[in-house]
Length: 360
Image 1 (cartoon, rainbow, N blue to C red):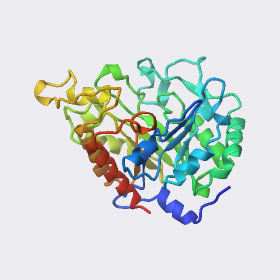
Image 2: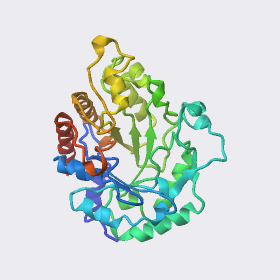
Image 3: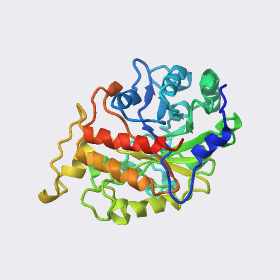
């Protein structure tokens, strides 16, 4: 297994804190999706557009009869490393699968757990033999899982909306630590939380933040909340009800209040112009004088200037927060980045990447 040249350097990168934050990570959530057939390589399109990246996500997926734990991801890690990227490895499909035998209600674990019927994601539990599957996956890919190759692991990408309780998150993290893949060795162990609570029913309602603190075995939280445009309370362009009520700073402070000592945040950033953004900037909920005339289509994806504003707002906000370590854009456009974003959006992403790369 590769080892880090300096654990101290890795520690400073992963757990930086202080009076003002520098963004120590920027990448794409769709960086590599490994499935049957051609993989999705989101980082390639971003690289070709000139966006600096030093992070991202690599996702081994179940597909047909092939299970995620049998995926060989070494060549994908090598290609990313050759371009200055150390990804987070997403273990969602390695460890978890839909659990159809339980109540679809999430219960008291999450703020809106009893509104489960409004969300469409599967209730998930550990796969049969999850620990053995993880061991097999780690053994297969061990030569490229050193801290000079990857930043760490995401045990599950959206634990709240898949009704994964804290004890399962902690158990998954402990499986990694017991095998030498923990913070003591320089690895991040993260979990994702989808926090959209939109004022637009067609987009569903997330189950919200945990009712208590985030799981104690995690080093990082990776929240996704895409429908935030303005930093101001009551902005007509915000869809997220909690942001409308609290403002972005209030929403952030609520999240920070649930972090354990030492836990850091890598935030999910909206990157595309899809129906969600159409509703934000030009939807029927807005008065005519508030509409920006943004035309959003789903094929091909077409970014417009408001998305550059979203990116710049979040970069500015993130750089003020000591516990915000980086931003992960939800995805680049199209398979292999074949549809390039609007130049204003690309420019915003270049600025974010340059901010992140100053950390080393």
